[in-house]
Image 1: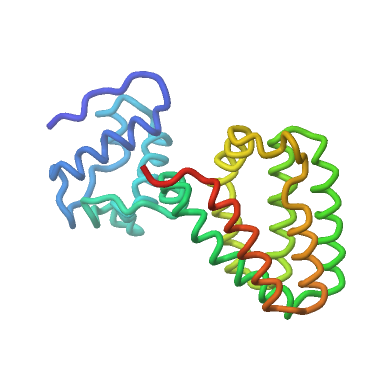
Image 2: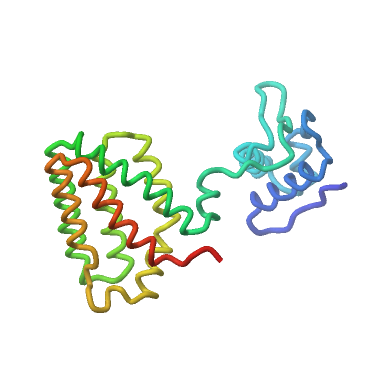
Length: 230
């Protein structure tokens, strides 16, 4: 199957899509070596730098592997979805349930490991969340996320911190929409303030089980409001 030239637009995406079709369609089976960058660039009608970026995207998807001095080889015919993409495409409730697992454990660890600096950061984030109660929904959600991030940071576990950072971009828009659609802030501009204050106090008191309980209850309340799987 000839590749045919591409037309202007996001050329890297187009090139990656065209090459992906060749691989998943069986034109280049597993173990085969792709044509060189110069050849691919000529066939697709694009520059070598664009081809290079497209191949990098395919490598990130687990379809090809560059081998120093040998070229680029096909290692799979089915794309492996990376973690950020999987999160973006997951049902909001599925992602939120896993977020709960991360945060409840983080709250427990934060109570055991927190420093005075961590407590100061959590208190400041709590006050910032309260201040954001007079702002729009997006600003309020961002302030809420910042408080949760301060608790996760206090757990002093870089893996938990990284997991939280991966989850929040995927959930932020859904949470903003949830606040807007439910009108939860119409009567109470700062919903959940008492629960968040309790969480900070539990962490400060080094009460790990109370911190976990409060975190679980607060997150469960939000999960209850999220749309169920269709």
